[in-house]
Structure formats: structure tokens, C-alpha cells
Image (cartoon, rainbow, N blue to C red):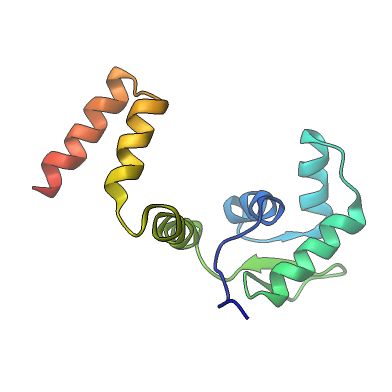
Length: 124
């Protein structure tokens, strides 16, 4: 059996991206926001949020009528873990090939290059 992964599926991440800025949300809150972007069933959102709770990404908090869900870990921590797992799996733990790939494939605007250079200078 594979070790438990901290990486979220695309659907799970989409739901978490709705909840993180709010701090907490009901299934109806998440459903409403996702419906603005694409066709999705209420029961699908409910099932996915229950899965996220089972996996330890969400916790239920007391609410008036409906269940209210709150993230267990901040977005920055989860994203950092997902990026680390991706770099380990795809690039054998080295971030350099990822950066080279991003520079060659996507390219950077002048502003992005300046920001990256500031980060590199700060690290030195």
C-alpha cells in the first residue's frame, strides 16, 4: 500500500481554494461558488467535503443548522507540501530542473524576472 499523500486532487484543491479565503464554509457556500464557474451537483460537493474531512484536510465546526467546515492547515502549508511532493516525484528532489523548465516553457515577464532576482539576491 502507498504511503498517504498530502497532495490534493484537482477537485479537492478547487474546494479548498473556496474555503481557505473564507476561513470556513458550508457545503451550500462552496456549491454556490463552484456553480458560478462550472456545472456541479450539490451532492458531489457534499461528498468531496466529507472526503476532505476524512483525509484530515477539513474539520467540522459547530454551526446553526448546516455543517460548517474549516481548513485544518493553512493554504501556504498545503501548497508547500504539494510542491515538495511534486519536486520529489518528478525531479528526484531537485528544484533546479523545475525552475529551468518553467523558465524555458513559460517564460517570465520583465516584472517576474525582477521579482525572482530580488528573491535570489535576498537568499545570498
